[in-house]
Image (tube, rainbow, N blue to C red):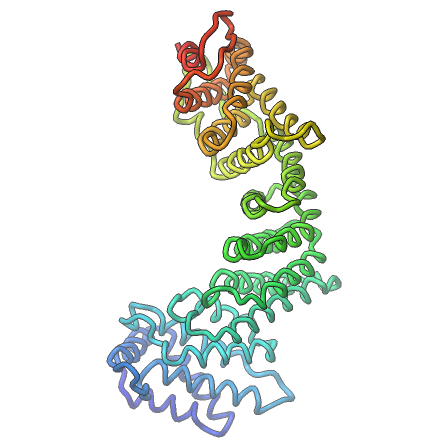
Amino acid sequence: MVTSTDLQEIISKLSSDKAKAREEGIKLLCTWLEGERSVAFCKFLGQNTAKLKPNEVPHSDTWPFLITLLMRCISSEISGNKRRPPKIIFAKALRVSVQRAEDVKFSGMLLPLLSAVKMLFSHVLDVLSNVQSFQSEYGIMLRHLLAVRGYRFHMRKRIYCNLLLLFMEKVESSLSDKNNSQYNHKEEVFRHILTLQSLLENPPGDFPETLRDDIVKGFVRIFSFVRDEGKISRKLIECINTYLLKDGPNLGCQSLEIHDAIRHFIYSCWLTTHDRGLKDALYFYARLQLNLTRGADDASSLVEQLQDVIFKELDQTNLPVSSVSRSDGIKDDKIVTLSSSQCGLVELAALVFYRACVNIFKAPSTEKRIRREHAAGSLKEALMKGKWLWNATFRYLIRNYYTRMNKDLFVYWFDGICTSFERILNDANMGHTYDGLLWTLRSLQRLSCVLLLPVSRVEIPSRTSYNLNEACIFLFL
């Protein structure tokens, strides 16, 4: 059973002018926040907080009062002794108190710290800027607060901007320290990046226009120190993806400034990395950049760069996903399934082919047209060989971009499949690997669904002339 007397004992010690008494108060509070007594203690504070009326000043038996008192206590601890760092137990007590206050099963209400949250964000910025030993605990607390929509929208924009720039600086300075390869240092860098991503993901409204230049330049500087793949580089790519997703449409050509800074790292590890998380982040990054640079003059350069690595990866990944004997038959449900990572690849590849081929018939007879025809020709060649991942890409291309592209292109690709279909079928039977055949059929099925009107006459293996719909039906018989 918890009473006001128990809480008053804690408050009395935390309010003391003496450092020793305040430390005793922190230790006493921690005993109440942990163990069996924590449930009753947190419910007592939560129930009293829930009884507060709007605009009522929180009294001593509530969470906002306790959190405010802890902030003052910590400020006194920091300023009271310049010769030694403040004890970590103070930061832990505040972090645990904030988390317990936000736990619905204890508080019984939403946003119990709303009346104190502005002061809390300001306090967090002040401590993170000046107290090195509190970085981990305060970083966890900041990420926790940012995840609550109702709290981050009460954060002053000045505080947000300063926090974001602070963590970009922390990440940059940590990465630039090449002499420090200790495990603890790498974990600290990773925690800084986690907090940076949380800040990018949870702004208090729109990103201030004055902040965009600093963010772009910050990423450019950060990636000047990134050379090796790993969880740090993966998380940094995820940070950029988060920012492009949130503020990309407002960046204009600045998105390509970011790309210029990181493209060496991207293309150096794209085909060699075994980190599936990093590869998925790269797929998503490339799709974001392609969608953001649709009207940019340099967009064609980005498409060409991606085209080279995508072609190689579709071939590199083009290993059979399954092999079955004739007696087993084709188990369609197992063969046709793409992993989430393969879905990311084929969706990106379809977008690259769309961007490379969309204006192929409008392009002048220049190098650009040659490059676009190269993309269309490469796809046709792969389809004629029955490569399953290329056919999966073709199916996504039909599904997502058919209505935006010239139908003659699909006739061109369809004709290639028709001329080679008998060989694709024979290869599947001889090798007992039906992935290429099955994905070829699925592509043709998708194509037959969208080509409702005959648009061309093509030759298929029987040497009889059919329109596209009739040819598709013939192939499925």
